[in-house]
Image (cartoon, rainbow, N blue to C red):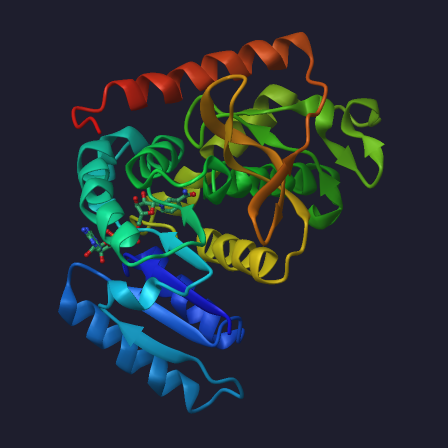
Length: 305
Ligand SMILES: NC(=O)c1ccc[n+]([C@@H]2O[C@H](COP(=O)([O-])OP(=O)(O)OC[C@H]3O[C@@H](n4cnc5c(N)ncnc54)[C@H](O)[C@@H]3O)[C@@H](O)[C@H]2O)c1
């Protein structure tokens, strides 16, 4: 049985639930929110949608015990309005770290033994904190990290060279936040390294376009949902299908003793292995700086284990 739980049914969680139901990704979906009325409404709305669909997804709401035999939990509880006008993801930390403290014991008590994907911001710090609070293996708790930022890089490059974004390879590394960076040495168009591309691409400008990508999607509506929900659904498929697909997510690296966005292999065990790309010296320095910001965020948490 394909069973998944979603904790937090705001813009992100509701869109993810809708995506999983319309794409028939799961047999059972457990939906949990601190707002009971919201959970009930989402259940009715999803059941209405199913009348027009070919698949059938059983919806269970507000039941942590039902998570016991789920394969994946997606954690997207938070308060997007706390982000403010500048989109600083650390502004949510005081709220979201408390939500982790509240929900992690309930996840543990349910007997859940699967993979936790965290989306909640600040994404890398929350992934780390969820791992600490649950005590689960680091390979079984990871954040969506720079997966969405990498998609934004693919888009930005695609726009500049007029080639399909799906033909752009490579990774955004580090924090899902302002200190992230495109590792240009890893970026390819087709199989060709971008750095050997003929046209005069302004990498600094592209870097900025990638960093600003989230803000562009956020600014006019005060949240983002489609990109991240699709990203979450894709990760769930990878786990359920044991796909062994390479994607950049926020995973724990014991050498740097930190979670951060980097390419890994995703399968039924969560993080199956790491893809160590040979970064340039400049990229390695950018990574160290970015990782330090994530570490400081975790160290500054007022709520210790
Ligand atoms: N990692 C990414 O790329 C990415 C992208 C988009 C959004 N986000 C983050 O995802 C999170 C959710 O975003 P959103 O727009 O859906 O926010 P939202 O404010 O619309 O929804 C958050 C939901 O969490 C619920 N919630 C709060 N505390 C809870 C608790 N203790 N238990 C269960 N549910 C609880 C709220 O009731 C609400 O329904 C935010 O932290 C946001 O910053 C991350």
